[in-house]
Structures are given as C-alpha cells and as structure tokens.
Length: 193
Image 1 (cartoon, helix red, strand yellow):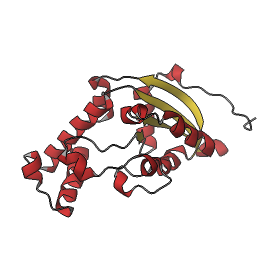
Image 2 (cartoon, one colour):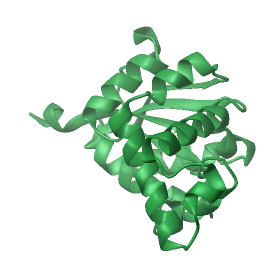
Image 3 (cartoon, one colour):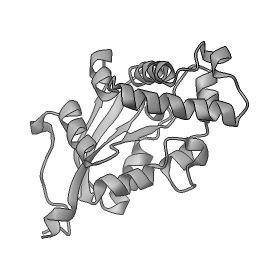
Image 4 (cartoon, helix red, strand yellow):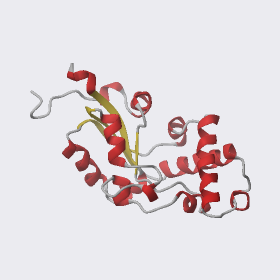
C-alpha cells in the first residue's frame, strides 16, 4: 500500500548551478529530506535534446509569453520596444530559445529522485520559477536573485539554478527523455529493509 505514495521525479541542476558549485549542496538537501537518488549523471546536452525538454507547444509558449507581458506592464516597461512584439506567443518562443541556449551552455547534472510524494515535495523544495518571490529555505530562494523582467530585458532566461518536474506526467516524460531505463536503479537505503 505504501508503494502508491512513492514517486520518481527528475531534477536538473542547470549549467548556472554547476558553474556556481552548488551540485553537492542541492543533492544534500534532497538526500537529507529522505529522497533516494535513483539515477545521477553529468551531461552536456545538444539543442535537439533540449528542444524535446522545452517543447514547442503554442498554448504553453503563449502562457509563458503572457506572464512576461504581465510583468512588463507591472513594472512599467514596453515589451514591443524591448522585444519588438507584444504577441505573447512570439515572446514565449523567444523565451524558449533563451532557455535552450542556457541549458546547452555547459554541463548539467540530471537526476531521478525517488520518495514519498516526490514530485510535489521536490517542487516545494525547489521553489517557484519566479525566483524573486521564491521563499527563503527553497533552493531558488537561497541561491538565486533574479527577476523575470530583468531576464527578458537582457534577453535571457531567469537564473533558476534547477529544474524539477512539474507533475507526475511530466516526470514520466522527462525520465524517458533524460535517462535510459538501465540508468535508473532500484535499491534499498538503510532503514528501508
């Protein structure tokens, strides 16, 4: 019955997190909470791999672009002046491109974590994508200072340090994208016997 609560989720320590030497600290946080590392590797991915991770779906890209437009309005900037468009879909495509550039800019750490309600708990530990509102104690709240508007004005993604699967379906997709089946291991941690 307990197995119904056990999930696996994907976490990426992005190249900016690797370059800052935060891999051990991030991994330690997950292990201290009780998550098991089922897979772990360092890779330098190409654009084809990243294009699958940051899918080119109009609805998603439009929502990403709209959030950016909302921030432009909130802070009194003109998206058309800065980006050459007010179309949320076009802005979402730009942001996807910047995310792809960032994820291919250096090596990253990809891991599969396993544990009770792993998807939800890991997302809470990571904190919101908008790091400017990420609470202290979350990975993004403790290790990143950035804002969506500044990132867009500089034509780059928000420096979020890590990626974590957003839901169970996404976690299953990302496990298959980032790992071969034989790279994901089943074992007992001390105390699980």
